[in-house]
Every structure is written in structure tokens, then in C-alpha cells.
Image (cartoon, rainbow, N blue to C red; front, side):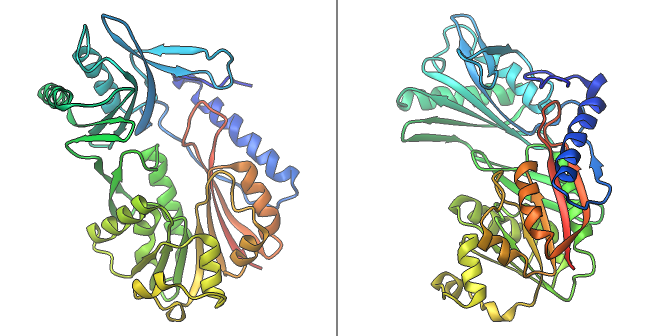
Length: 377
């Protein structure tokens, strides 16, 4: 088995890493007795693929270094970095610029313990600095000076400083990403500190895959659970007559509404419901003021397709899986092969797997993301 790489890449052996993890997941599925089609494999660029990263910081009087830790090591094994070739070029440029700007006894160094980076394919960048200290006006002015220094060096950068119960924006906390799909362009605001797809190339493959799975559904409606900031919602809206999307977190919900407006999408209604509440609403078990306030009448929908993109633990709950099985088509986007396998054991009692895809979001690790199209038997 090839070792998981931390803080480095191995382009020469990239295909071996990808083959190894694909084979591992296939063995998991076939060992569970699942009947699966030949998987569609979507590789990642072997370097410069990550659009967001977070690093611990190591400081001395002269410089800062970025650090990652070996998972499970006790005591923690620290790996010091000046660059990370798994991250987009804009992040590497930002790392070098930050090191240079904060060299010596810089007033922004005390209390700084972590830095997070979020960028887009066209090199918009947000750097978030995390502190164990209180901010005062002098700190704010120094943060603005740092932003101006980084911009003078050619970076399209905004800064955020965070401490306990304090947050300073200098100037924005969001970037605007553009995904060029096979037959559509999607523009998406992504807010620092909330989930966004970490690998833009693989995200493009995932959105194209989902659109292909939605072919032939123009006269029917889509229900989307766990819609987040609306990445899949935005990509799939024109494939359906109407879309009802649900999410529970406030910031992603606001961002999703903003993304729908940005892309001129008018056939989507979004409501803050969890999966259980959505099932209750569709089954007529409960009525929700949130639906009424958002001008949503459940009886107006003729759902044919369900899109689920659950957390790594999967769906799991028997009642939720029973609800999912009511739909003719299920597009299941998974970030956990083991939980996906367990869910598929249940769903394949009523549905067959039409398509299976693997997306290498995290090269050089054993992690793989999956896409599954299921149709009712």
C-alpha cells in the first residue's frame, strides 16, 4: 500500500494512488454483495488542486512557518512547510507573501496560531488569521497595512482576523468562484469558514455528472436535501420544472439564496428544514410555518428525483432511507465510501444502481468521493 502523503505530492505516482483507492472501494462494494456498474473515474490534477487549506503556525523571532500534523501521532508529529504543492498556486503565493510580510518582530505575530486560505480558480484569495489575543484599534490598523502590502505585491486578497468573540473583516469574507460546465456556467459565492468544494476540478466533474443523471427530467421536479450554499442546486435547476431545496444552517442558506439570484434562477424555492422535517412535510405528518413564509406549497410539486449530499456519516437512519426510497431517481453524492455502502445495502432493495462514479477530491490519501444514480426497480 502506498503511504498517505501529508504536506507533499507525488505526481509521478499519482495514477498508482488513484488505482489503489478505487480498487479498495470496489472491493468494499462487491464484498457487500452490491451489483454495481463499471465505475466512471474522474481524476484530480496531481498538483495545485486544493482551493482551501488550513495550517498551524510555527513562529520564531525571524520568521513564520506553516505546519501540518500527522493524524493520530502522539505526541503530535509536526511537519513544517514553506509551500504546499497540493494547494492552488494562489495559496502558495499567499503563503510566501505572508511569510515575507510577517518576518522579524511584526506587531501581528503575537498570539497568531493558525491561518486558513480560501481561493478561486482565477486567484481571488482570502487569508484568515486566528489569534489567542484581543484586538484593539492599533491591531486593526496593522491588519489594514498588511492587506495593502499583500495587494501591492500583486495578490487579489482580503484578510480576516479572528479571536474569541471577535472577528475583523478586511474587507470581504467571500470569494466568487466560476465553474465552466459542459453546457452551462455557474457562478458561486463561497464564504470563508463555511463548506465549499475543496477541489475545483473534481467539483466540475461532479456537477457535470449530476447534470447527466438529471437528463430527461424537464417536466418533473427535484427535491434536494443538504443543499449547503447551493452548488448542486445552481447547477441542476434548469434540468427540472421546479426545485425544492432544504438546508438547516443559516449562513449557507443565505449564501444559497444569493447564488440563485446571481445566476438568475427563478424555479427554486429554498427552506430551512432538516431531512426528517422535510419527510414529515411531504408525508402530511406536520405543517411548517417556514414553508408558508417562503410561499411553498408542497402539493404544487411532482417530484421524480431526490438529490442527497449527506455528511460523511451518510444517511443511516432507517426512516430517512425509507423516505428516500419513495423517489423514482436518487442522485447520491457521497464523501464516505463506508457509509455509502451501508446506505446502498438498503436502497438497492428498491432501486438499482445505474451509474457509479469516483471523484478524487483528495489525492494521495485513501479518501474518495462518489456519485451514484439509482432508479426504482
